[in-house]
Length: 590
Image 1 (cartoon, rainbow, N blue to C red):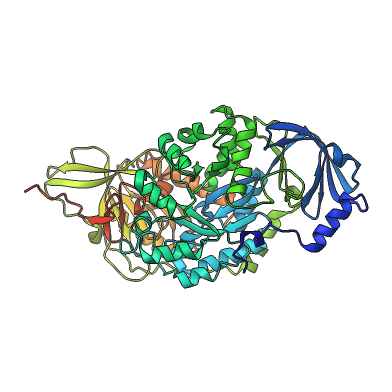
Image 2 (cartoon, rainbow, N blue to C red):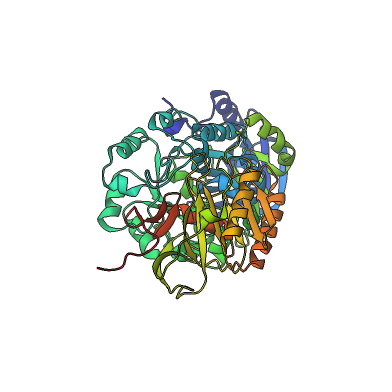
């Protein structure tokens, strides 16, 4: 059985690999590569040590003065740079970058992200096991280490939403032995865990020998103890210091997130100390190409930790690599030391995080010609490109909200958070007692032809037109926000026509869009082209009054019924605190 972590990708050297490496260490043969004139950051002792670094068969043979005597076929002068381990993104969804895995690799590998732990539940929600099988095929074609967690909650919460496909435990178990599978992806249905739901416990038991990732925003006390006792090992949904401290004290790793909307780094950076750093990891979760191009990826988080939060460099680089490797049981990743995979970032300055070159598996990334290989790799992976937008054209009157005087539940967004507030606002027959309330619709897109679910949202600021997306976590139905039903219907129908994506409507015209033909959630374009579209979408959204920095990412999470407090699915408004559907209009007290 390969369900043992020791048999996973990067974990073992083949016999011939090891034999050759040993002959190098005995001085009998030349290594493949020797990095000279550099120093090495020791993440264990917190020191900067002298080089060189000798690499053979993709793994590190020796480091430091002892490596001086070893010969290599190729020697590279690193001009006094500092070597740090390649970065590991501890939890993310490639789909929410809107890039294919190969385009993601091309974009983030030069930024120093040499390994990712991804959960493809976005695509699995759209098309079931076809989605996960494609991701596993991609993982085998990639240079970047892509580890794939098996999606645990499809849909996120049963009975509260409709998605594109089931994903049964029997199907999940088929991937236990795959070398790129490390375990079970984020377990979002924490009430099922705490309540001892038999189906949920069966999933936890099936993956008990591997990693089990968590998702428990604001959970505390005995409920958090129950969740942790079940075997769940981490959480990336932590949003405040005390919440993080409690999770750490209970032996749960805190994966600190800085995505395009959910920005928790500032609140959680104080958690990182010499004591806690083994249980602190970094992740992006959901980060789009525009943010990556403008700021960076994991390298951006490391820089912020050092420069803004005054975290010691060895701790900042530790949580970006070795802590994640240890947490996931990846014994040959995360350090620059003998027997570790040669995934190395070369910098001129530790505090600036100015990566000059990246080495992965003993190869320089800038010599791999990743740009030229994206198209061929994508073709070889046989991507599932079937149509997934199967709802009939939506009429504007289907989106009407029959408002009468009274109190209404409103979803209020919170800046830089996926959390929302449950707001109650009074409508007097002409207007609400609070400004900035827009119409919201969620439209099922998998062919059931359900009428749209309609509601109200505060915080986007639209004063005309509409915006819409087919990226609606996690079931990925269409989400639209607008000032009027006609604009919303036009935006929704445009997405149905183009096979999914983002769009903005102003004065009866689609002023910007981005096509996402792969599952209605991913583009086949380059990150640069996607970024260009996102910039145009942001401008178009701003023109109709949108004040949110990342409107399409923000709105996509309005449909996720596992993050408090109020969300909306195709079935209606969901009170996430109670995990139950509620009416749009508040019942008058008796």
